[in-house]
Amino acid sequence: MRMLGAVLAVLLSLAGALRAQAPAAAVLRERANDLAYNLDYPEALALLKQAVARDSRDPASARRLAAVAWFSILFGQGAILVDDYLGQARSSVDRKPPPPDLDKLFRSEIARAAAIADERLRANPRDPDAHFEAGAAAGFMASYIGTVEGRVLGGFGSAKRAFNEHERVLALDPRRTDAGFVVGLYRYAISQLSAPMRLMSYMVGFGGGKERGLKMVEQAAEGSSSVQTDARFILIVMYSREQRFDDALKVIGQLQARYPRNRLLWLEAASTSLRAGRPADARKALGTGMAMLESDPRPRAYGEEARWRYYEGATLVLLRDTAGADRALRAALAAEAPGWLHGRARKELGKQADLAGNRALAIGEYRMAQKLCREGKDDECSGEVGRLLRTPYR
Image (cartoon, rainbow, N blue to C red; front, side, top):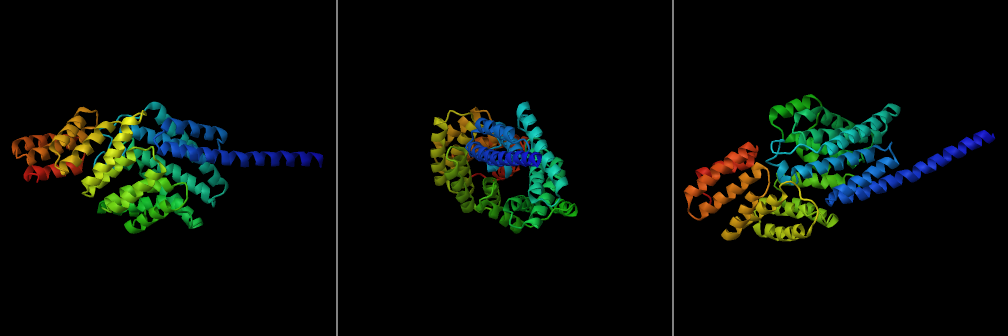
């Protein structure tokens, strides 16, 4: 009996330690999320490494560590705005290879998260948390393959696993808006594919439905789950694609309030305002954001300086500030950036020439823009330049 009591005492002590450990890891994850979404990636990575060390059997900490490594890679590659997922940069054409340490960190931690989740599923096939973690790990792997490696179809199998696992979570617990986020995202994405690709997706088990998918992501963004911020960022892409610019700007405002050190949110607001045809609003957002940029000692994203100058130039073209637009666009061309972004700057310079009545100069700029945009697989830019070559900008 004394031995049984001793064993029970040890077990109770271990249980208490685990209960104390889990909240500590969750607190570290929450702090790390705030840091990551405020662009403090090194600090976020350090905290998440502590979380994993504190509880190496927690798939959520490992998965989040992998996610922030992925965010850091995209930041270094310059894939930082919704524009990167609407028209250009849909491949790895102009992207730098990922830093080996971050690439290794992502792969090791996402593998750790997946292995722990699969082990829990073998022990309890009806555990919704285990299904969620298995699906989340697969979803991040699919996204990494598509964005960092530029192989969209290469991540198809992982995406299918993510969709299936999170559909299973919803079947076990329909209240799980965190799982609904992933299912909704894929449903919306499938609805945007060409007819043959949609048919193939349906045949292998993906579900579609644009409105249903969008609603599921909105519900995840409104709730208090761990995916709320991720869902809000995705909503900016969805609303922009649907030309619901007021809704996109509302979400950007929510994110600005929560992550006030993320200067890129003001650049996103300017870009969205331009898509909405509101150059005065874009100029205001750029003014705030560029003041933040000048006083921010932290590293810049690849091509970030050129981004700010390009959007400033495009805004001033619309506002007919010829001298200011020319200065900003020349600065964008002088800064390091992907070729497609220089192509867009050339396009705006062509508009400037058209407005000045110099059609020959405008055509020269448009031809350079078309070459750069085509090489960068920026279909949106190439299409606009094609129209401008036929009809002068007014």
